[in-house]
Length: 356
Image (cartoon, helix red, strand yellow):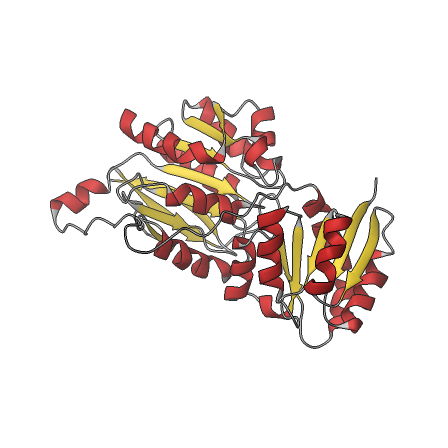
């Protein structure tokens, strides 16, 4: 079965280059192309592609507006390919928040050479996207008089009380494709004094700091990119930095992040397995491990190690995953206690906290 791809890019040169590259793969069928969303919209509504390959900067309607429209009406797996999504850019995070399965940054110069050298990666990204199940984009939260706002963070308390808040059983979480939205859904539902959470989200270097800042502004919990030696305390979420591994270590009854370089594990850096396996060594059964949406098997072995030590383990269910790969691999290993829809993950964290 072939994967039908529709290309939307205002550059005729780019469209021709992409068409040439995609036509060389027997598993991909180029359904068509358009120079802007105004032309593409009616076509893809009538004949739905398996994957949309979308630029951002286009006349008439920009790609992000179009992506949000598609995801709100009838979600189509979408890969963004744009010069505006350079590494670490806000636009790339906006695209992922809007529902893009993946983002490919194309250079302003040397485009033809870039596409030729990146052909295998681009084709694999499209095939991965075709297996994903994007979710309907949530409508904007209403604001104004009488409407509730985001939960306020508890004020920091100095002295012994703040020290006591640092002593808690940790929560560790791993995710990949579709994870940026899934993590936001979970964290938005948590109060500001929830257990400390350490997260590995497969994300390139320079994206994670901006992603953490965005979550920090939106959530009651504090969120930041992890630094070596950070203490994991209540109400704090640490995001593993892109291009580095994050482990947990325990000292004097408290948990600390160890952030260091190293070879990729399961082709990833950061790796969920690195976080989970280190947590098994230092926390044993006193931990909650969560596996969210993602492609591949990173984290499955680490979750199995935690499960066998008696830790609580939870995986997101297939129906709410963008890609069920990582949760499925953990389930197949017998590493998962509970399989839950995304909307119940936050409640599982709070239940774990109440049990002490």
